[in-house]
Length: 574
Ligand code: DGT
Ligand code: CA
Ligand code: CA
Ligand code: ZN
Image (cartoon, rainbow, N blue to C red):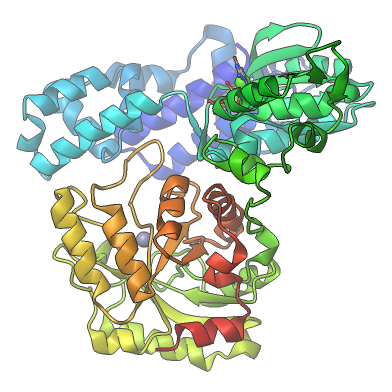
């Protein structure tokens, strides 16, 4: 069996053990081993057969896992897996894709109703049988049904951050091939769409043909979908993301980059513009219809200039006004990552974060931030150990006492205050008044009717201490859609009250979406881009928030945390 097959068996067994409620330490060792096997450049089967080599020499493979791999080689399965499959069918694993169902619920559903597939699950919900189970209810039924819909709609798409990781990995690998000059990601990844269907990579240089060979033999490539002289398509990694690689000549590089960056709608509009100008545009260049003389193709700038347009940043290429703006020279000067000076939503061990306030501040400083706000959860989120009034105020004092010298960068005291079901704030006004920066967010009761949710948010905005509305629509990409509410009304109210709309940079959220950013800006809103980090590593997600802001046509002046810290402090003074 190839490495991918072995890795899949290990990780599926881990999932089944989780449903069975087994020891988390053993589950984790299977998961780690799956990752190691999957990415190992040499086939496990070859190592197992070679008497001069040992599986246990591979970092991350211990004795137990080595035995498991031997067993898989010998008979195509292993004891633990057989045992688990005796308890639960493999099809049950797809239920993990449904929001709101943990391993315990999956087991309960299987034990009670023999639910083994998404279709089974849908039936049980529609027959109102899920609500009869302990700790489940009509609300969960509704939530699961919604999530099934989202799951079916988004199958085969991946988070932008995942696509970016794969693109980075492959780019590094391909750049090491002799004679390769450039490797560039085009398609939806270059446009920074929040989810990507497949990756479109472009390679140039005399080594491009060799790069195609290396590409199809990458250890994480488990299936070659097609390979020609200039193009190869594969499935990559356990998740099976499709990656297309195209080899290009440098004389038409700009035309190809433009063509494969899309979007399709943008390209269609450009082509008809070309036609009106007596030109043709394709992936080889821009040429005159009469006589066929080529006028552009080496760079993208040349292509756009040939069409009488300013160069259009990829994030704007959705045919939603960018071509008109490029013609009129009125494209926005989009915000850039280097302009982000502050990060104003993050959690520490005080609530559900993984690191101390000192560690978060140091990590933010290392990324070049000049200031941060610490915004732990408030008390109604009991599972996060949220802060009550007393702790919130004490924590704020602690933050102030540790001055800038102790922490390296300026730290504002803040809180992510939960918006309760009726729109009241989780903490009293007296406590909130002690803080520099309060983000208000919805974390529960997301299934209200639109009008009720709008009223709830309007009431929340009445609180004079709120500075920002956190992850404003509540969406979780690929899992949960925004809760229903009248976005325009809320945006107008935020603009009127000077409450900043958060662009949440967490890759699973990227909340709010580009179209809403634009709509809100048109209503006069100002924004803050925040990582919502729960770990120092998450602070680097700022780049995704910036890319969303760019898709929403924002400039630095629209975003408060591009201000220097003194000006920021002045802007949020009451
Ligand atoms: P995705 O992969 O669904 O996230 O979205 P894209 O935009 O990456 O789409 P994809 O991978 O199908 O194609 C990449 C780009 O190549 C696309 O944005 C425009 C261009 N392209 C590909 N096929 C066609 C086509 O048949 N017609 C046109 N006009 N453009 C195409
Ligand atoms: Ca694509
Ligand atoms: Ca593609
Ligand atoms: Zn939150």
